[in-house]
Image (cartoon, helix red, strand yellow):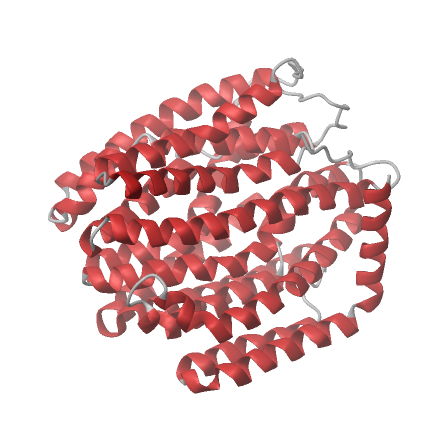
Length: 486
């Protein structure tokens, strides 16, 4: 197991962030390869209507799985993250057992209720293909909910590498299953079985790794844990809704071809969100520990560092995707038509990365209600925009809805953090380079012939950020080197 040191001691931050970074990066790299291969395989195993139904059903399963546990996994982070980590031990086993029982029951019931509603609500029941896939895939709901709980438990104990790798491992297992199905000429039922087994794999691995290494305390699940969890689940639902609700609305309002095109474009656009995910899992318990110890300035410093590093790692990838995006989308069928929407979606993810993890910061500093309200407001705005724009503009309207909602969310989040802490989360220099890169993407979306110019502008933004933060980057590299050589 990759073990990050606790939040005290020499090289603590370097070891923790490096461990989390490597875990997420390796997981996302594996997910990228496995996800692309899975997409290619499943578009050949299933026809367009089946693929559209599968995509919508998987979005429903993940949305429910991420929220059915009432955010109790985040209560683990709040409860356990306040205490000093104990070497090679996982504290809070008693609390984990209580939460896991609740999560499993709630997620199972929520999955079955969702299927029933999908079949009984007149507006949805006509979509027989999606309904069938929901029946086939419903075990993914409790499996995903329990995986989130186990990953949260490891994070709370300042273990970052292995749990963050589970997502990529699950994607790779699903890809292997799809490859076997394609070779054997099996059908939709086999696709569902492969997806379910892949969702169960992280649970088995994390459970085995914890054997003989647990501490019972803290335990005693209380009403305060449920209250915090419900606010977390509202925030998580809103966050996931920003990357899933658009597909659900298109699934209800657009033809199958448009749904399939948007599904492919939106999944690849999520690559840009990886820059923030590289450090979020590490930042959460560390920010909580810094605040509990009375050192808010350390949490703010790590906020800035993680944001700059995320941008520096993401902008080169963004430039490449801008250049090859059309060809990349066409690898999976006639999906190059979604290139404009793809660029708009990437601009939204880039803006979110550039402003940083303000909701995470607020939630770890006992301002969870404000963070939740901002997330919910952004989701409501996005749904309204989707209903207004999708009927007339299809996938372009959906992408613009995401962009506008994510921009509003970050501007309001910036204001909240400033009013609460007098902490300016984005400097003028970062805002300038971020505007140039995002503007370049939108220009290329307007006219595909400008894609080379857009990639050049994005590269210039990367160089500008690097020059402006040369000292910070040098210190980070020096600390990472010391950590690796220890």
